[in-house]
Amino acid sequence: MAQPLEDLTAIVTGAGRGLGRAEALELGRLGARVIVNDYGQPGRDGSGEASAAPAEDVAAEIRDAGGRAVAHLGDVADHEQARGLVELAIDTFGRLDILVNNAGILRDRMVFSMTEDEWDSVIRVHLKGHFNTTHFAAAHWRERAKATGGPVHGRIINTSSEAFLAGSAGQPNYAAAKGGIVGLTTSTALALAKYGVTANAICPRARTRMTEDVFAGFQQPADGTLDALAPEHVAPLVGYLASPAAARVNGQLLVVHGGMVAIAERPRIAAKFDTAKEVFSYQELDELLTPYYAERPPNETFAAAEVLGLKHG
Image (cartoon, rainbow, N blue to C red; front, side, top):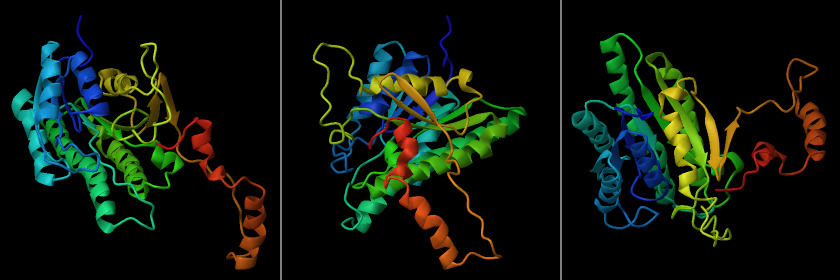
């Protein structure tokens, strides 16, 4: 019986550990040929010597299970290295069909203490890294669609975070990057739909080295059952979004963890006020808005996140 992703080629960035590793293994299990990308730095802040070992180990796992995979050591935040990653997929397997953007680092600090470098480095890896690979993959799919005269199978799955949805006081750089990724995703979805390409974003909740502090108080089950925060709960959704079955899923934001998938809607208008004159005055705005907010809890801004049962992460 044919696998859902048979004869399709996928790139997974940041796939040497944690969430990316689980996603790469799942795509391989579903029949995809996988390019396993990881810069291989040991520090979650992007520090340490780069190593090919994490990516090579995951590629070997896929091959040992009967799949096809090659490793790529490269920094996706570097424009030319991202080009090389996409070219590796095309040169090795003839084309690219699936792009999973997962690579990221953390450099947490309160906004009043954060340095320029801490801001720039996180925006660079998360947001620019997503753009770089998307740019080259999109160009490839556009060329293929023009050459064949019809739509192609192209899937982009980007990684956002609940830090964007619910806020995260100690992660202004990370939250901003993850919010930017959602904007990049919806823009890309609109731009590439006519070529048969979809772009979606996920907000995963998973226990990895990136989130070890966030989930420090959540104990892993001692009875041998699968941890509710295991990355393996997230990977199947990525496999589905990468498949032909998800052709109508485009420009969406999905929260996923522990056997749950929630589809987030775009923000809704909570209230509307019209001026009684041609232009609002300060006094009129004070009379309208101050009572409105005085009657509401201070944290109602995050009502959408509360409805989903979300916390920071």
